Structure formats: C-alpha cells, structure tokens
Length: 353
Ligand code: NAP
Ligand code: ZN
Image (tube, rainbow, N blue to C red):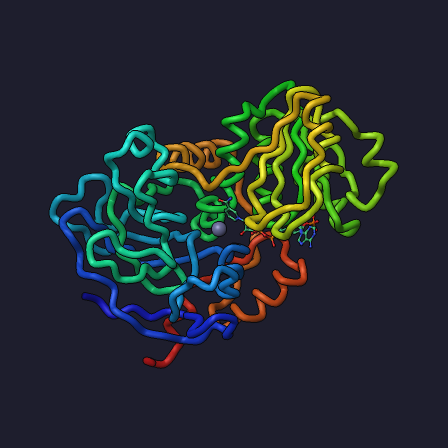
C-alpha cells in the first residue's frame, strides 16, 4: 500500500481539510499515477452535500484527473512509466456484460465503479478521488493524453467534456444541425466548444445576462436569456437538440417548445425529479426528453484526440488545493469561468497529517 495525501470532506457538508489514507497496492493490471491536476466538477459539490444520504466519509472528490504514470503492474501493456495519462469518473466495471463489450462501461449491468464514492470490486473498500497526490487505477480505465494537449487544462475533458460529447455524438450534432446549450457553466461551455467544433450552429440559453459576450466568444451564434419570454417565444420550434446542464430542478416545458420536429432535449445536469412535462408539447412536435451519463472509455479517448486535433480546451482558473472551499462557494453562487482546476503540486506544501 502507498500513503496518499489528499483533501477530504470528513462528514457531509463539512469543508474539505487535509487527510492521509492508504491507496491499495498495485494488482497486476493496475497503474499508479502521480496526479498533476484535477478539475472541480459541480458533482463534487453535490457529493459533499450528500443529498442521497448514502455517502461514505471521509470523502475525497475529484474525477477530472491528469497525471503521470509512476509505476505499473506486471501485466500492464497500455501505458508505460512516465506517460501522461488521465482518469475520469469511473475506475472499473465488470468488463464482461454486453454493455461493457459495447464500450458502454458507464452503463455496466453490474454497475461501474465510480472514481470516488464507489467500492473497489475486489476489496470493497471505498474509492477516493483526485484531490489527492496519487491514484491507483485498472489500466483499462486509464486514458492516454495525446501529445500537445495542455496538461493543466485537459482535466475537465474527462467529465465536463465527455458528458456533453457523448450526447452530441449520439444525437449527431454537426453541420446543418441546430444545437442549444442550457446553462453556461463547466459542462455548458464545453458543450458549446465541442458542438461548434463538430460544425453545428450553437445557441446558449442562460439565466445570466453577464454571460452573453462570453457565449458569443466561445463560438455560439446566438444567446437566449431564459428570463426573456419574448425571446423564448420567438425561438420556438428551432432546435434539433438541447443539451440541458442546469444542476437544479427546473420546468422543462419552456425548453421543450424550443425543439423543432423530432428534436430532443438531453438532460445531463439535474438528478432530481422535475415538474410535470406537458405531454401535448411532446406529441404535437414528436419531441423527446432523454438523459445521458458521462461516456465510455473508447469515446473519451476519441474526445481527447478530437480536442488535441482541433485545439479545444476548457477555460480554466487554476487554484491551489488550499483554496478549494472558496472555489466551492464560488461555484455555488455561479461565479466560475468556467472550470476550476487544482494544481496538485500545492498539496506538497501541506504538513504531514
Ligand atoms: P456549473 O459549472 O456550476 O454550471 C451550471 C450552470 O447551470 C451555471 O453556470 C448556470 O448557467 C446554470 N445554473 C446554475 N444554477 C442555476 C439555477 N438555479 N437555475 C438555472 N440555471 C442555473 O456545473 P457543472 O459542473 O457544469 O455541472 C452541471 C450539472 O451536471 C451538475 O448537476 C453536475 O452534477 C451534473 N453532471 C452530470 C454528469 C452526467 O454524467 N450526467 C456529469 C457531470 C456533471 P447560466 O448562468 O448560464 O444560467
Ligand atoms: Zn463531473
């Protein structure tokens, strides 16, 4: 076992504080990664609030991990010591069911093992995430960072990026399609960049008038303020796809009306029940409501290659790990442009716990 330094929530809603724990010893197909950077996702904040009441504490969040391979198990073939690698929201799955065989490990029939708040498949010990100096991961769940991709900014591709890339690809965003993105935060700003990169015409739907200029600078051709009923009315029946990243329950009906015939709204943000949907709006326009969760390992690797080729990276604000609680406060009040990334080297200045 190796001793890991980390920042953890010691109980629900408590601020993160330094913590040390043991990472498991390497199994034959494991990779030990020194973590360089870790993105800060709104899901990390949800996890600390522990709305489900099912969380185990202490909890080390973080699933947008970029690092360097320090050591490999004897059977590892995919990566070598010194490689730049990345880890996203999951670290294991059964790898044998039909879904895993279809590269949909995140929908594994036995349940994928999440990077944090999961349980190791063999030892059942809780998994701990990337706000930490190193991590041990089964090689099949380790991504290669293509040459040329900025390590400091690549982390958010592993969650914010793949969570929006996967539905954009599945619903065929590209030239000739009109895509709207609701909520311009970490996921939303990646959705804009990726949809523009795929050739779609992109509109941002926001609650924040202060983000209009940013949305246009990110590549959107148009911005709709969701608080402006006249603009929302004028935009009725105009989109093929809406990626909805809003993290709190909200009324979908005004968004459904924005979909064109056969259009789909894909929910990726909210995980709570929503107010009733008006079935007439679905029926009259053959519209659909769908949901989507992160993405598989192969499609995440495809995303990293796409971003390296097109030079697409998140807009990041790099912070020291000691600033994480302040960063969460800012995320809570919608003051992030557009993703915090923790420089994990700052963990080394912590005294031993
Ligand atoms: P974020 O950076 O905080 O951005 C969320 C955006 O939603 C905000 O920038 C804001 O955009 C809008 N918003 C915030 N509060 C709102 C409110 N009360 N009403 C309406 N709009 C509001 O969060 P994120 O990291 O992008 O994550 C978004 C959600 O996706 C979270 O719930 C997260 O847990 C979830 N998530 C899901 C998956 C998945 O697999 N499905 C993966 C990762 C994250 P505007 O200012 O433009 O309105
Ligand atoms: Zn995330």
